[in-house]
Image (cartoon, rainbow, N blue to C red):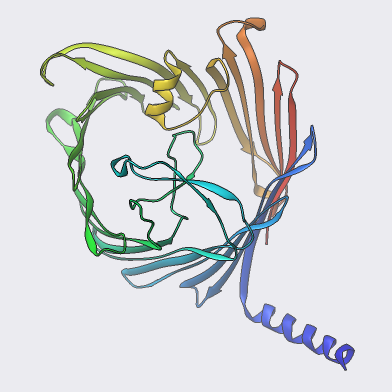
Length: 403
């Protein structure tokens, strides 16, 4: 009986697939040197309903199997847009470290995850008309699945915004409005103790002043008070060259960023990372600390040459919220190219060389390359190679398949 039903089941399934508007993408990256390991595997399935609504399933895998499953919904009615989704932990049973806000004054907790488990859900609605946007976003998390880059190393850690004793859920409601040049965002949070004000950001964007000057500003504050004030002024010079000067004032320090821009053929940018040194008053500037600089020459939409040098690696890491260097490295050179590939696609190639001050030939520590090449209209080949002068080599091969 079962064998008789199987062909009919196949016919019904093929009929449903033909009627539905399915699409998707499968990306995988497998490390083959020095050992075989699944570095990345993501399967995305999209189902479009009446051209206005799309339901998506995103599944993430590693060498242990399915590690993350999420679903999303996007659509709208005229000027009203709606997005939402849910995420789950299907199999991961690791013991994780949970961090808390500094104001809690409590140590971290070790929590063992118990799958299958609900992680989070969100829904966002926005109404846009005549350049004005009004909206609200509702986000809900289950303990301890709120993620944040706590140690600023580029990796997300388990973080819980509520002080112990631990609450089962955390809810964040965001109200936002954009009426150019003004923008406003207000966050209201609930740690199972009732809704309360969390933080707000008031901004100005592209305010035209005299003589072609453009001005941006952002004011951030929390329920504890003032957070920071950042201002940015773009000064037009000549020959399509302009200079952007941005300053951020916080309670404890000040940061300054100077960025020359050229809007000619390609674009050259020079950024200095540092901090203002003041005297007894915030207005008394007595010096400037330089943490590093970056020079980037953009040749096309995806071709550029870039140099980043750090004078203080730790402070530059904190300022950029990125863990770029390894060991004693302080500098890298990077080039990226792109161009037409097979079947109307575009290839991309990125090469980076990292350096330390001494201890190796010319200070070179490692070379890293990433290549994406279209093989067919819906298939890209991925290659990633990292070679260290100390002897370590990593090679990964993968693909992106669209259907």
